[in-house]
Length: 274
Image (cartoon, rainbow, N blue to C red):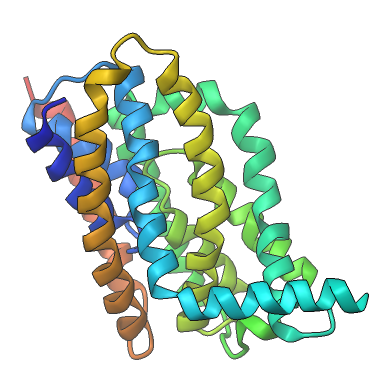
C-alpha cells in the first residue's frame, strides 16, 4: 500500500466511521472500485489500525466529558459508591456495553477477516445497515438522555455493536439504532455511540497490532499507517461535529437511503462487472 492510497483510505475512514454508513464497508469497497489490490491480511490490519486515528478524534472532541467521567469514576470508587454520580454510572455503562463485542470479536475473528475480503458480503451487510436505520426511526420513541441509561440499556446497545464486527454493518449506525430502541434521543444515542467507540477500537487495534508485528512486511507498512492515521483523525473530528448537529434536527432516513443505494448498486455492479 502506498502513502497516497493510505491517505485516501484514511480520509474515507475519518469521514465514514461516525456517519452511520459503515467505514469498514467503505474501506473494502473503495479499493475494489478503484482496482487497488492489497494482501487481504495486510488490508484487514490496516483497516483496523487506521481506526485509531478516529479514536484520537473522539478523545479530542469529548475530552472534557471524558475527564469529568474519569474523575467521577475515581471519586466514586474512593468513596465506596461507584454508581452514585450519574457521570460515573455513564462511564461504567460504556464499559459494560463494550463487553459483548469484546467477547464475540475474539470468537468471530476469522469469519470477520474473511468478510473483509468479500465485496458482495459487504454490500449485503450495507443493505442490513439500511434496514436497521429505517426500523430504528420507524419503531423508536426517543426521549431520554445517556445519563438515564440502565444496565439493560447498555447491554442492548452493546449487543447491537456486535453486529458491526462485519464490514458493511455500521458500528455507529447499529449503536445509534440500539440507543433509539432504548428511547435515547438521536443526539444522545450518537454521543453514547462515540464514547463506546473508544474501548471497542482500542481493543480491536491492540489485537491488530499484534498481528502486524507478526508480518514480515511490518516495517514497510509503518509510513502508510501513520499517513492513514493522521488523515482519519483530522476528518473524524469534523465528522463528529457535523453529525451531532445534524441529528439534533433531522432523522436517519438519509443514511438509510444511502446505504441501500450503495449496497444495492454495488451488488448490481458486481454482477455486471467483467
